[in-house]
Length: 366
Image (cartoon, rainbow, N blue to C red; front, side, top):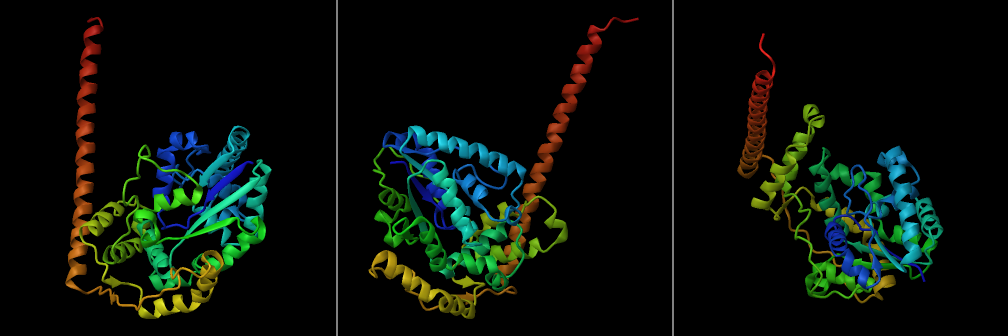
């Protein structure tokens, strides 16, 4: 039977680590009967996301994600390779977190996805999805978008329709099963306390039926570390600049490095009111998920702690120090790049002068 094991995220649940594990151990996995295709890199997407072609080909509105004709061309070729791989392999593993995101925008996506998958020759689909409690996911996701060029507060981010839909796990899981059938979805909770030996890769292997042994290489830890709250807020301020908006994202490195040096998990831009709103909105759906997929035997997703974070203070001495450190780092890095360019220009100028001299010596004198 031709089976597709499809990992669809969600984002900020160790997805990059899992994708790196699959990519780095593709040859060993193939010995166990699992084919992990290596597909092309799409604009704006890592090559690790080898299932991205399904998101592109199944989306309802390509303009919503700025998919272009190039995306369509790449997706067509990868889909053809996927169908061809099914002719010689019984189990294929694909992964892409954009599939979950696209699916939260409308149920038609899942119908399209099912048609794409079965049209390639798949007879059985096992969809693996990791869920993280919505307060944690939404805050981590907000900081992830801040790394790029998002400039809205967490409160405004939380009210966006795409975010509201993405956090409604129960609704989307119901839509998936209505198309792919009961038992097609394997829900896992993103909580290291729930993983074998605290490792999400071990959990994924058990869920997918992979036997992990000493031959497998482990992904690097913290492939995509989260920003600290202070660093995220400073970056958000910078993102508001019209000049910076059109410039290269050169502050991304300094804010990431500052976060690594100075974590501040005790403060947050999420207010107690935000937390309670998230809890009230999604608690009922989460309880249904635990009942449906875990037989009510897990407290994950339904165990909401008391909120004890301190509000982030934009006027604190820590914030002022962070601003100085981040922008000093940025200036130093830019200065090093400029010096490197100047040195390279000097080297090239000297090389050109030398070549001119050599050429002149070869030419006849009058």
